[in-house]
Length: 402
Ligand SMILES: *Cc1c(COP(=O)(O)O)cnc(C)c1O
Image (cartoon, rainbow, N blue to C red):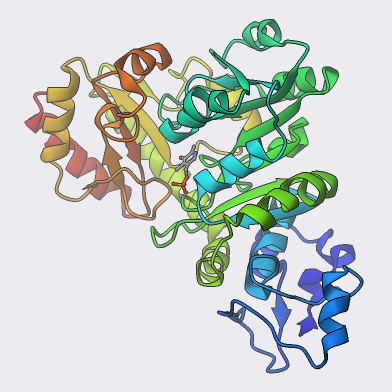
C-alpha cells in the first residue's frame, strides 16, 4: 500500500473541506488506482508466524482481521475525521450502531444521561428502554431550553445526548451553550449530526466531545447503503470506543464503506444544492400550510440560532396540517413525483408521516410530548428541479383540501 498525501495530516490539515471530501484518507495499492480500492476481505495472511504474533502484541501496525482493521474502511474513517475536524473516527454498520456504541462504550450502571426528548425514534428507544435495563439513569428534557439542561445535571451525569436540528420537529439545540455547560461539569457531549453533516455544522468547533452519524443519510446521499460513524478525540476513540467496537462487532462492511467514500466526494455540492432547493420548496409550502418547521425560514422560532450554527438550512423540514393523520395521509397519497419514504438525505425528494412511521414505536404520549403532531409531515428535498417538486406538492396540497 502507498500512503498518499490524503493520509498525511501535516498536508491534509491545509486542505479545505471540498478537497478533504475527495482526497482525504486515500491509500493506493501498488497498482496506483485513482479511485479508492475495495478490499472485500475478512482476513489477512502473513509471510511468517512472528509477523502475525507481533501484530497481535500491538508491536506491528499491520492488519489482522476486518473486525479490527480494513483498508477501505480506514480510508473512509480518515476522510470523515478530516471533514469533521476530529482526531479520530470509527465507522459502524448503521447510524443506530454508531449511537449505541457511542453511548454504551462510555456508560456503566449507576451513570446518568441527559437527552433531548425530540429525537429519532430509535435514539429515544436507547434512552427510554435500553439504558434503564442496564442500570443507566436517564432524563429527557426540552433541549431547546438551556435552563433545562442545567437543571437536569446530577452528580452522576456522564453524558449529554441530542440532535440539532432534531428529527422531525426541527428543534435546535444551542451548541455553544450546551457544550460549554457540559465541559464545566466534566460531562461528555454526544451530538447526532445526521441532519447537517460536516458540510453544514461542525459541533466539535462548538465544544462537543463526540459527533455520531447515520452516514446512511447525507453522507451516502443516494439511498444505497446503511452506515454509521463516531468521531472524537484519539483518546475517546482508542480507549473507549475501540475496545467496545472490536469486541462487540458493529463494524461497517468494506463494500458499504466504499459506497460512502464515493458519496462523500459530492457531499459539499449536494448539501449546498439541496439546501437551496429546500429554501425554494419551503417558501412555497409556507404559503399553503398552517405551520412549517424550517430552520432556514424566519418563521422558525429558533431561526437565528439555527443560522448561527449551520452554514445553510439543510435538505429537511417539516410541516403540520390541521386535519391530523387523515389529511397528512391524503397529501402523501396524492404525490406523483415525491416518494412516500421514511429515508432522508437522499438525492430524491422523499416525504413521510413520522407519527405512523419513524415515531410509531415511541407511543402517542411521548409523541405529543416531543411535538410530533398527528398532522406532521417531514420532507427531504432532493436534487430534482425544485420547480417540479413544488408543482407536485401544489397538486397534492390541493388534493388534500389545502
Ligand atoms: C436515520 C437516523 C438515525 C439512525 O440511522 P440508521 O443509519 O438508520 O441506523 C439516527 N439519528 C438520526 C437523527 C437519524 O435521522
